[in-house]
Amino acid sequence: MPKRKRARGGKRINLKAAKKAIRITIDGKKRLDLSKREISSFPKCLLKLLDVVELDLSRNFIKKVPNWIEKFQDLRLLDLHSNQIKNLPGSIGHLQNLHFLNVSNNKLTEKGIPMELNQLKKLRQLNLGLNAIDVLPTSIGALKDLEQVGLFDNNLTKVPPGVLELPKLKKLNTERNPILPTKEELEAEQQEAIQRVGNLHLVNEKYLCKPCVAMCHGEKSKLNKRKSLFTNLVTPNSTSKKIKTND
Image (tube, rainbow, N blue to C red; front, side, top):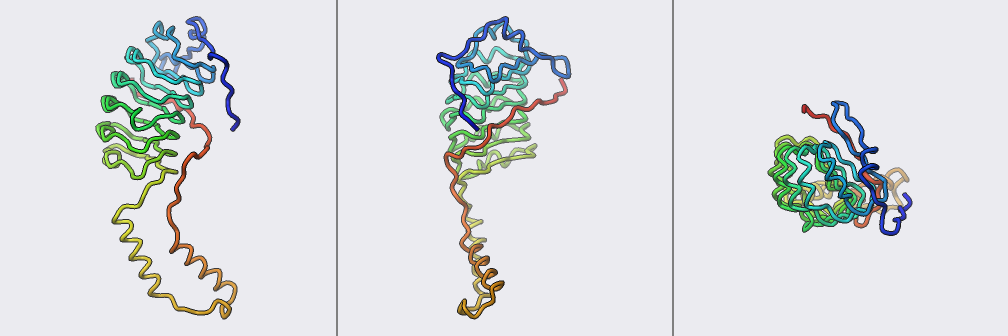
């Protein structure tokens, strides 16, 4: 995917333009879509539109989420994927009605994820994929309503235990992380290797037919198989999703 060229200083969005970008959701609520506008910062005019329930600022050049994001008390969807965000403010934890949060494809690290995230008690979907996160705060385990968690394309070496214990979790994506096997997995792999070796017999390759040689090489490949490390992977941007609520 070709890189987007940033306009010098970024484009500005005034209140009139923002109002034109408002759409009505299926349940009659307001959705503000300011995606792909080459915006470099949160437009302050949004403070005049605090009644929106869905805010999409994805695919821009935003580097910072302002503390006044907490003023959107009715917000149930916040989509900030594909920006240049390094830190989320602690005030994001005040969005008590938030159901969907997408901050994938940014520049988040462990330090950029505030502990206050655990205050989002109604959060159902959380996408943190395509960032530079190596450790996930244990406070994520407090989000008991989480159903889907995206952690793909990060630097995690283990699956966060708090996430695995979420009672309503239906989908967890940890693909393309350098996750190391647990002690139990290593022991199981060792036992499997011992059993395989116990059934092997030494024979010179030249005495085998081609199908047998291919089969032996396949078995050898299985024994030597190890999980690869994926860093700096380039993948397509994630896409925003609409959610249905009972509001």
